[in-house]
Amino acid sequence: MECMNRKIAIGGLIIVLGLLSYLMLSSIAPTEATGQFLFLTAGIVLYILVQLPLPAFYQKILPYAGAFTFLLLIVTLLLGRISHGAMRWLPIGPLHLQISEFAKPILVLLLAQFAAYSRASLRARHGRRKSGPRRCGAENN
Image 1 (cartoon, rainbow, N blue to C red):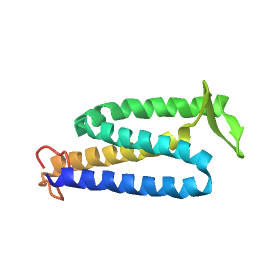
Image 2: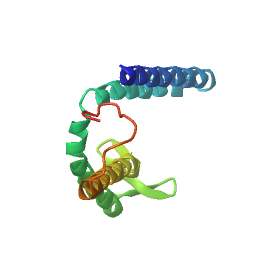
Image 3: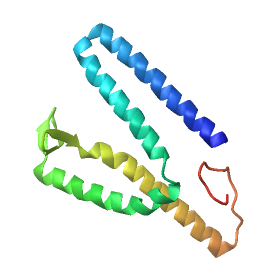
Image 4: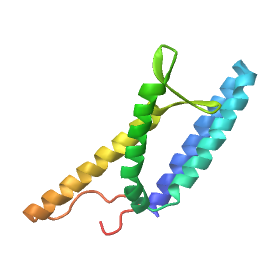
């Protein structure tokens, strides 16, 4: 229940800050505010959808996401366009994506998974008990 309350509090904070940014932008540049509201709505929907699967699902797909992101980074290096002084933009249809922005959270998650597996193997090798704070979604912590 504590994890659910934390997720609701974070979601509420995202909504409040997003609406505040929308209101401020609408008073400064009303034409840009519509796009900001669409991104805010998409972000909230994505936040809710990411909460649905169990953490084990993300642990299973993370290596594939890392490999795919690495492949896209190589493609960006070869086919990327220079924009705003950086060759980090990959044109995919009408969109121009900055793959390095997707790579950052994937890299953090891969390093966290590596650290967790390393810690577990050290514990198994040396017979130490598992300790530490409880995590949201963890099964037998």
